[in-house]
Image (cartoon, rainbow, N blue to C red; front, top):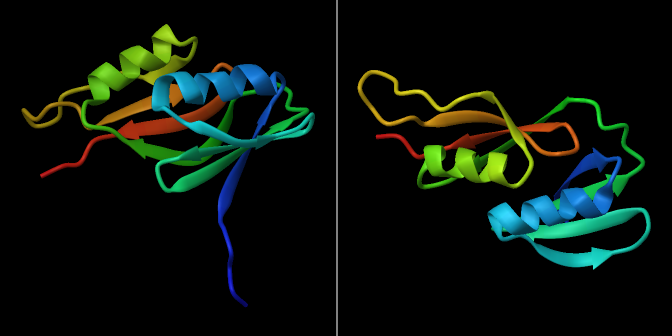
Length: 115
């Protein structure tokens, strides 16, 4: 079997709001969109946002590596998301992890490269 493409699907009660969130804070670009699904390109990945979600908090397993976790976490909050775990220093190093929630309840991590 030859895999042509891999995408990760998340659910949203308001697909347009979710799409705009990832475009605004992460620079995602819309590949295609219809009434049921919006596909976003983000770095070398594709995120599909499917309409019909219930807006409940759901762990996605998605992790986004950024240069500055503190600044990234602030952008998440400014764009209507929230933090379930604030970035914290560890062993005298700058924060390397923030647990975030998009406006639709999808939980994800922001991380920075360590070492």
